[in-house]
Every structure is written in structure tokens, then in C-alpha cells.
Length: 401
Image 1 (spheres, rainbow, N blue to C red):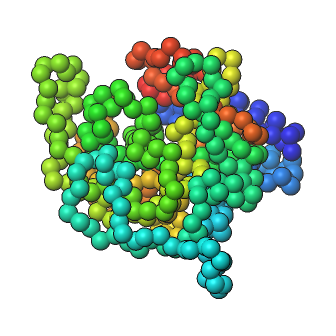
Image 2 (image 1 turned 45 degrees about the horizontal axis):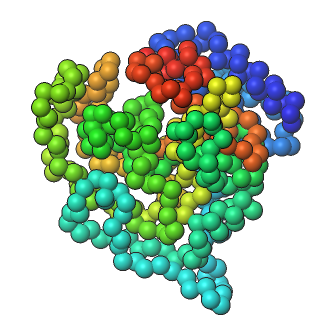
């Protein structure tokens, strides 16, 4: 198996430099990332009984298949893993309906809607909404769920002081157990903002000034993990009720780009958030991707970001996808021109309305009882933190070109 992995690693290096990707820098980096994800996740799907001919066939596909086809295969590979994860979580948390409750195991949770963490993040409570029923689950603590998940899939995640030697590292994310290359290690939780709702991200326009738990996909989708925190101890309704009031413009302290953005993006008024309340499993052991640290100098990342479009038709899996969309994806479509996003005519029932645009972390090598390290790829157009050492300066430039 190690021999086959070495072949894949060599293919990753060669294809990343291929002239096939000689387009605009940002698109080049996106396609190179998809190519790597195609190789890693397809390798994972082969399993430990894979033969050399299987590996060579996948490498050949990576050189010939279009980026769109590779992207579809990556989504299928990730979704297959997510199905296995959700099945394991069901096994841990769902009571056996054919048996009576075990002694002392009082199943079920109150269906009275609690005010979610997201509602505090986005503002005051609005008109009451009908909350969906919360399915009965075993009353396990999150730590118990995590240990049982490790027994079923071979690994889980934990938070403890980072091994990165700088004062801002804080809590680090650690794999507890073993995971093969191409494995979905963690899910990025929180509130999903399409470009139409950027101005509603807390702290806008300087959204990252006091929030280090923001990340972005290539398609412009931003995920704010701050409201999720480290999860919770129950399955509960997690929804946004009302958009916060838009702050008035401050005294002329804004830079020209900020003023221009506000002129181009006049706030939408009276938009409800979370019209359909969502029941989410807050004890999700893998919903901790936002705690992964950037590697220190001399260290290498061991995971990479992968976009995952979760199909909302998979209702049985929804409770384990730790995300809530802000606003209605059908209300406003946005198109990008340079650095700005502009509204375009909305298309009812479009593809965006049928998926939840999320992110996961995928292992780029086999992991065993170690800290999860993610290349942050911070933009070089802004002053970087002192602790940040670029893993690949060229990749950083391409990502944010």
C-alpha cells in the first residue's frame, strides 16, 4: 500500500505543474487542488486491498479527465465517506426501536425550541416559527459519542493545546486514532454566507478583524464557524431568526474601497434568515475543522480543504451536516467581476438551492494520533501575522490573485 501511495504522491507533484493548468492564476490553483483531491479521495476509495493496476488507472484518469469530471468524482468520493460517517453516527445515537429502552437510559430530548447560538450571532428573535420535531437519541455526552465513533471508523477528533510554538496557537485539533490518506478528517461548521449576504457577516466590512474562524471557498461562499464554537451536548434546533439591523455608516473613517463596496451592495431589508428551522447534531465529533492550526516553519500540512456540496435531498443525513445557510439562496444570485460581486436575475429552483455549500478537510497522507495542520494560504496583499510562514508562496498568490 505504501508503494502505491508513493506513486500517487509523484503523480500529484507532476500534475500540479502541468501546462494543462496554464490559465489565470486563481483558476489554475483551483484546478490543481481539484486534481490533488481527485487523486487522494480516489486512492482512499480503492481501499487497502487495491492493486497497482487500479492505482495506475486512476493516475491516468487524472491526466485525461476534465476538471469538471474530476470535480464530480471528488464530490461522489466525499459523499460516499459522509454516508458512512452518518451511518456510524446513527448507530451510536439512535435507539433500537425494536427493543425497550435500556434501564436508566431515558431516551429523547425536549422538543421545546431553545434559542440557538446562531440566533445570538445574527440578532434579536423574530416571529416565532414552527420547530421540527427532534428525533429521539441516546442521552450520550459528546465525549462518549466521540469515543464510540473512533470504535466504528477508526478515528475521532479532540481539542488540546497545540504543539505549534507560538502564543496565538491556542487549542489545536488532533486526530485520535488512525486515518488513511484521502479520508475526510473534519467538517467546517457554522453559518454559510453567499456573496449576496456578505454585508451581514458580523463585523462587516472588516469581518476578519475579530474573528479567526472565517473561511472561504473558491466560489465566494464564506463560512463563519464562530457561532458553532466547540459544538454542544444535544441534538437541537439551530437556526437564524432575523437579520440584524444594518449599522449606519460611521464617520469618514472608511477607506475608499469600503465606501465603494457599500454603494454597490445596498443592504437588503426585511430578509428573514433560517425560515426552515434545522435540527443539527451538536455532538458531532468531526465538526471541528475551524480549530486546525497552520503549520509552523519546517512543518508540513497534513490536510487540505475540499469543497463539498451536500445534496439537501439527503434528508436522513442533514442533521450531521453542521451548517446553516444565511438567507435564501433563491432570492439573489451574484456574479463576480474582478474583486466585486454584482446582483443578477435570480433563477428559481437553481442548482444552488438544492445543495448546501460546505467545506471538509481531507488527509493528504496517513494520520495517526497527531495534530491536524492546514495550510491557511493567507493573502500576501495584506499584512500577515508574525507566526505565519508560507508553505508555498506561489500557491498563496494564485489562490488570491
